[in-house]
Amino acid sequence: MCGNTTSTSILLIYTGGTIGMVENPATGALEPLDFAYLYDNIPEMKRLACQIDIKQVDPPIDSSTISIENWINMASLIQQHYDLYDGFVILHGTDTMSFSASALSFMLQGLTKPVIFTGSQLPIGRLRTDGKENLLTAIEIAAAKREDGSARVPEVCIFFQDYLMRGNRTSKVSADKFRAFKSHNYPQLAFAGIDIHYNEGVIHRDAQHHELKVLSTLDPNVAILKLFPGITRPIVEAILGVPNLKGVILETFGSGNAPKFEWFTECLAEATARGMVIVNVTQCTTGTVDMSRYETGRQLHAAGVVCGYDMTSESAVTKMMYLLGQGLEVNRVRELMGTPLRGEMNLSLDHEDFYCWRR
Image (cartoon, rainbow, N blue to C red; front, side):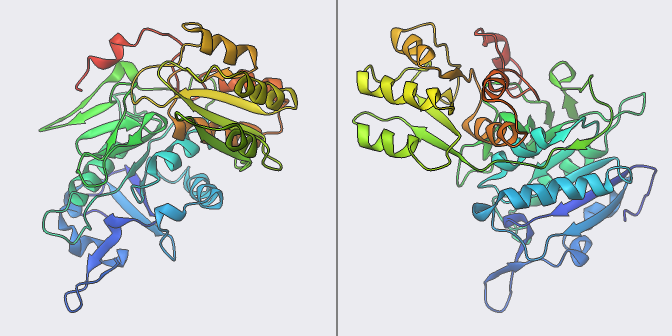
């Protein structure tokens, strides 16, 4: 609990990751931090004007081994404590943070409170750690309210190195830089400098649902197929022929282009004809898929491939797991994969306005 308590309360959920590690002074080895002593490591937390409670996953999860079950547990924790807290901060390893933030954005329907993921590139006990600033600012954002008392940012986000980003719009872009995440196709929701500046016009507010509903059935029978020059028919057939596979995220070139080989289009058409959902996203870090621009894109459309517009691969694969898990008809899944549900995609092909705010 903070030293200066107010009516604002935050639940801090530690799932694992570098931010929760400390260096053993005797051996030099990194060991999990006992969060009962968090205030000893970050005494600045006592100055935050809110109540902070801590839930610690035991044992901590290495984010490279994150699973659907872990996402369900995170969502369940939020659901169980939803009425008790004004916001939630999830400490998570950086490697798969974008996947987890994307997954929870779809699972938490009707969210009206902040769920802020953060972590660090250096352990919290290191002298030059980025963990302290990331954690303190994430808590401050989770506790922020508008004049009417509603949450300032009522969506699933990632805060990292000065920037607050929509979770299902992010990708990890660096293994060793402090600014490890970027939101390439959507503006940042806030910038934390001397003050925290919120970009109110791009913050998503759910107007349809006012009661939280956790949709925790996810279907893992999906795959990502990344195209490359020289890809062969046996490789494509092997992936599309995986038993029980229901959906594929097809990472194409440029604005959604793929090889013009007749066998390639035939493989895709055969897969969609038997009920597989295939979604086209670009390998490029910025920009969008436009399947009407070139002949190769039109061929994909004719083969039954869905346009993924500017979705990240992380968002597309978790969205597909979510939709397939709802037991919907295949055509309905295809329709919704091309429809914005949680601000994860933009249907407009003109993205110039997206790049003008604090790049």
